[in-house]
Image (tube, rainbow, N blue to C red; front, side, top):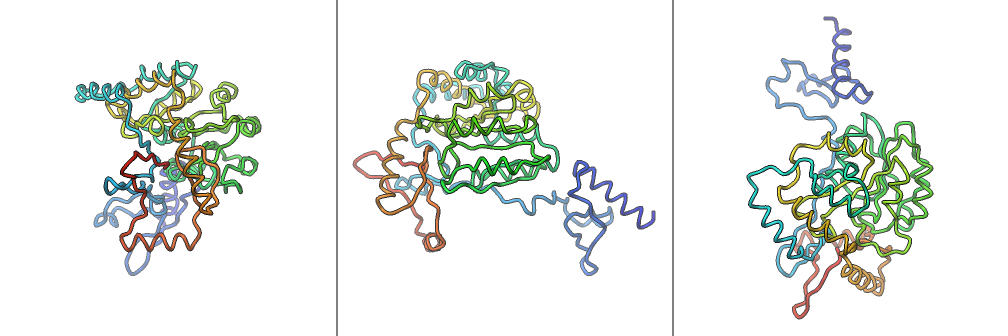
Length: 386
């Protein structure tokens, strides 16, 4: 085989790996001294015999998702992962314990009973509900079902740290759009970023990590301007904490537009983070596709049991987060009185945009082993926003 034919064959193999896109079009290149192949090339058989299996090129540039720092003792409140500080209600705990007796059995892969109860709660059809391992797991299914290689996914930045990671792993291109002056979404700029390759736009409201929301009027104006080929994912992981008058009416928008999908979770306000239960509210064609691309039996065995109880409870108590509302106002007020400039948060956390000096001081405390912490008062129970 001539050198030209070798190049053509290598390019053909790269094209197959990348789905036929234009990302991988390498020529055969290596350093003469070490024979180490450069990024984007595929070694021949004789060159791989003494090497480990080659990982995907994209992993070298992919940041790892870093979970929040865990509490180091009873005097430290774990705030970094925005978990609920309220333990699950007794009926949910009892349901989970009862479900543990069947740990030798796989869970219902279709989550039929849970989907039925969520559908009754939201006033939708069960076929419009798809359940997965937390809302982040369901978003991964959405991207797998929608995105071809080199398609684009637009989202605000900063927003949920997993967005660019999931988009990149799906073979798509992340398109982060800077937040507006209020630390919220700039919907006009996001609309201007649409191209022929755009397939998904994610609107996170309340936004993680700033807590800013998109009001219903703005989103109701934005969605009709989105081409029908683009899916609008409204990430409502923290929706239960919102107490605004003009809060986004996600279910109405979903019913009104075939290219709208809602993303929700039982992890935050419902206090079931360890069970990893999230769900999408999607039109039947997409919801069915999400179930097709889901890994079999991916949820916890006891997850649907606890989710059933909370889905039932939510019908009579749609906002299990009133305590968080009070603490959010209290902490925000204290910060502002101390001189901090913070956005209005509608989640269970508060965003402080750090200056370079603040970050230097913070890192200095970490190096000295003095971790910033929120201390619990001894004489009364303290509920921490975070």
